[in-house]
Image 1 (tube, rainbow over the protein chains, first blue to last red):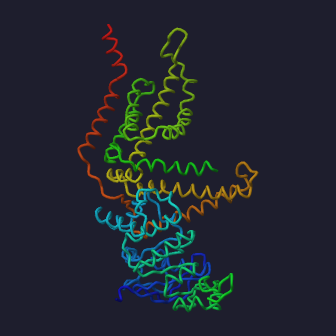
Image 2: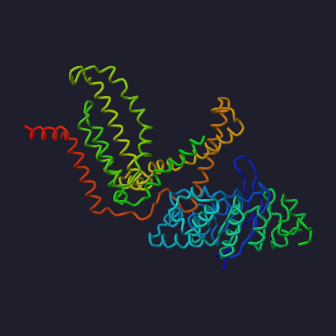
Image 3: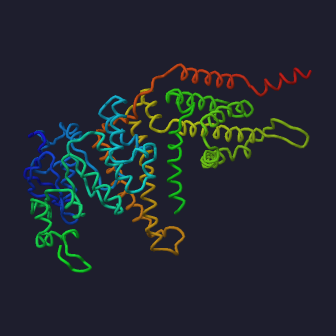
Amino acid sequence: MSHHITEVKELHYVYPDGLEALSGVSFRIYHGESVGLVGANGAGKSTLLMLLVGVLFPSKGEVMVGEMPVNKKTLPLIRQRVGMVFQNPDDQLFMNTVYDDVAFGPRNYNLGEPEVEKRVIQSIEKVGIAHLKDRAPYKLSGGEKRSAAIATILSMIPDILAMDEPSSGLDPKSRRRLINLLKGFSHTKIIASHDLDMVLELCERTMVLKNGKLVADGPTAEILNDAVLLENCGLEIPLGLQNCPVCGSTK
Amino acid sequence: MAGIIQSLYEIRFLDELSEKRTVIHNIHPLAKLLTTLIYIVAVVSFEKYEVSGLLPLIFYPVIIIGLAEIPLLPILKRLLLVVPFALGIGAFNPVFDHRIVFTAGWFTLTGGWVSFFSIVIKSILTVLAALTVIATTGMNRISFALRLLFVPRVLVLQLLLTYRYISVLMEEVARVLRAYHMRAPLHKGVRYNAWGSLAGNLLIRTFERAQNVYQAMVLRGFTGEYKTGGAPKIIITDLLYLTVWTLFFAAARLFDIPALIGSLVTGVVK
C-alpha cells in the first residue's frame, strides 16, 4: 500500500531569521503506524509537523505523502489526507458553535449539507462530545476543546493524524480519555509530545530529534529505556519505566 | 481588567444571539440585510428639522427585537456606547441655530434643539437597526448576503476576519494586562514608560495568533470563501418581509404619519 507511506528525504528547514530548525532529516512512516516524535524544546518537532502538512515548505529536501510530493499544487489533497491537531485548541476553534467548527473543513471541500452533517455527527460522537454540538467552543473546558479540535480534523476523514502536544494542559482524567480515544483510531499517527508516558502507551515507534537532527528512530520500548540517549537529548526515562519513587522497587 | 475580559464575552454575545431560531432569524439574510439598508437610508434621508416623521420608524427595531426574542438591556447598553458620538455631533446645533420654530407661552423651541433631537433619534434608530441585524443574522450570514450582492470577496473577507480577530486581540490584551498588573499591583493604569513595549508586544503576539488561526483554517481547506453551510433559498416569506417593510418605510418617509393620525383624530373630534 505504497500510497499510504509518508516519506521525508534529507529535509532541511531554515527560518527567515537564519535559525536552522531541521537539518537532513529522513524517515519513512508506513500505513497505520503510530509514531512518537520526541525531543527537547526547540528540537524541531513542531517545524517538522508544519512541513508535513505544507504550512511551511522545506529549504531543501522533500516531503512525500502517499505518492504525492508536498508542494503548492498538491496542497488541497495533502491537507485532506493529513489532519493536523494544533498544540493550542483555541487556535483551531474559531466558529460560533462546535457543530460549525467541525463542519468547517467538509464545507470547504464543497460537500453537500447532508454529507457534512453525517460527518460532523460521526466525528463528534467518536470523540464523545455529541452533547456539546451547539455550544460555543470558547466556553468549553480544556479537555472538551481538545476533543472538539480532534473532531474538526476527523470530519475531513484524513488518513494521517499529525498532533502537536495533544496532551498538554489536560487534567489526568481528560488525558486518559484522550489516550483511549487515540488508541481506538486506526489512522497513521504522528504525535509530537513531551508526554513520554503517553508516547509509550500509544506509539510502537519513536523518533528522537535533537537540534534539528534525527538522532534515533526505533521501537519505543527500546528508545524510551535508553537513559543515556534521552539524557543527551534533554529528556528522561518516562515515569512508567522508572523505578517506584516510594519503595524503590524495580520496574 | 475584569472589564476587558467581560467585554470579550460581550463581543461574542451578538454572535450567540444570532444562533437562536425565531421567525426573524429564519428570514433569509439577504432580505434582512436589504431591509436594514433601506431602513437606514430612509432614516437618514429625513431632513434636518424632522422629528415627528421619524417616530413611526421606531416600530421596525422594536418589532424585530420583540419577535426575535432579543434581550433588551444588553442591546440598549451597546446603544449607549454610540450615543455620546451623536450628542457630540449635535451638541453645537442649539448654540448656533436660534431660529424659533415653536412657542407656547414662556416656552420657545429653537431650530437648533429640533435638529439636535433629530440627529440623536436618527443615530439611535440606525444603530439599533444595525445591532438587530447582527443579533438576528450573525456576521457569517451577513457576509454571505454581501457576497450575493456582489460585494468583492476580498472586502467581505476583510470584514469577517477583522470581526473574528477582534476577540483574538482582546484575549491577548487581557493576558498582557493581567501579567502587568500582577507585577505592578499599585499602578492604577499602565505607566507611560511601559506603553511602547506593551503595545509592540501585543502587536506581535496578535500577529502570531492570527497566523495560527489562519493556518488552522487553511489546513481545513479554506481558500478565501467562508462557507457557512447550505445556501438558503429565498422563499416567498423573505420577499414578503422585504416588501412589507419597504412599503412601511416608504409610507413613513412620504407621509407624516403622526400628523396624519393627529389630523384624523382632530377631524373626528370636529
